[in-house]
Structures are given as structure tokens and as C-alpha cells.
Length: 158
Image (tube, one colour):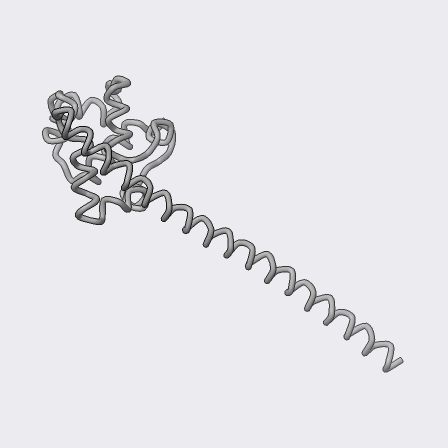
């Protein structure tokens, strides 16, 4: 289990002090220090907020070794200032119902665009994998033709 280490990685990725990070959870820096050293663990509500902050499912936060690079890659949305603002609003303090509805609409639209980007990336990856398989198949055919040419050249000499 890598929870303690990953909490620190997430905090470092957010570029926050233990005090700033603790404010997100309504706890002090001492509690964050305990989480990061493994002396205590966050409750389920805090783990859910860690999911929201990192964009990763809870099982990855607990089981995988996270890096800042992984968080950057997973949360490409945070590189775009406009999308970053929407994301920041989504993990901010409670808000009125109308603002929450607006935010939810923005997030639904953002999710749709991210899903389309993900599908395009997966399609490209699948095409690349298909291309690699075809290339490997052609290489094997060339090797078979070369072997046959050598065999025939041996017969011709003999």
C-alpha cells in the first residue's frame, strides 16, 4: 500500500503546503503530516476528495506508486487554464444550487469533450497497434521469402 506516499505526491503536485492542503479537508498540517508518514489514514470522505483532486480512482491512490508525471498525464485537463478554472470550482467550498447546476453543466460538457479526446487517442493507439501487427506480419513474410530464396539458391548450385 502506497497511500501515505501518494498523499504527499498529490500535495506536491498541487504545489500546496501541508497547511493549505489540510484546509481542503478541514484539518491541520499535523494531521496531513500523520497521513504522509503513515501514522494515520484519511477517512473515506477524505479519500473521495483525494480522488476528486487527483482525478484518479481510490484504488489507484491506495495501491499504485504515483508520480507527479502520472498525475500530470492523467489530469491533462489541468493544463488548460479555462478547464482548470472549471475543475477548481468543482472541488471548492459548497455553493448555491444555481451555481452548482451551472458548474455541473460545465463539467458535463467538459466530460463530453474529454471523452471524445480519450476515444480519439484510444482509436489512434488501436490503429498503431494494428499497424505494428501488420508490420510484424510483413517482416515474417519477408523472412520466409528470404529463407526460400536461400533454399532455392542452394538447390541451383547443387
